[in-house]
Length: 254
Image 1: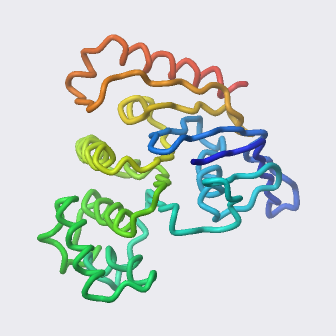
Image 2 (image 1 turned 90 degrees about the horizontal axis):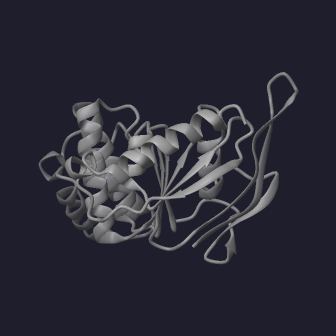
């Protein structure tokens, strides 16, 4: 579904120098697969995700989705960011219905579908609340519902749980997996967390330090549906965590 070929991105800094964020990245993501991108800080993980989303242009190589070269954002790719990106002046219902309204869906129908998604993410009772009245975890649930409501084939998630406390993060990871197992969207998920990557993913793409290059792609052969309490006792899970930790440490200096 996603084909990345020899991708590179070089920025011009404020000082007038050039900075290469990622270099010569090639990757294929089949339809319905959950793929995490893992790497040290500053290695270009988010830049890669924004390029797949069409928010940043490549300076080398290309990205195609279903055979079409990515030239800008599109409704087939739904972003979910760490910062929630909710409109503070809209209610939760208004935020979730926003993408549907932008696609021309009549208000009543958009709000009906938005309420269905709010029920799925356990926010139906908060439809009339504003983002400032919600906890961080609830705001992220609303952001995920807003993206899923317009039914993108691909989810692009940039550390969506990175700003949350540990308990809320674990809860939302489990809820995301439950939704994904129902929907089978293709997911490209950026994270700093090895544990999160192993728990969620079919494959983990490990990037080197700056400029980010693919160091290794690790298939995660663990049974689904995944239950964290069971995985913690699974020696294969523990070995994946150790392997990825080693790759991260080595890759930071590659």
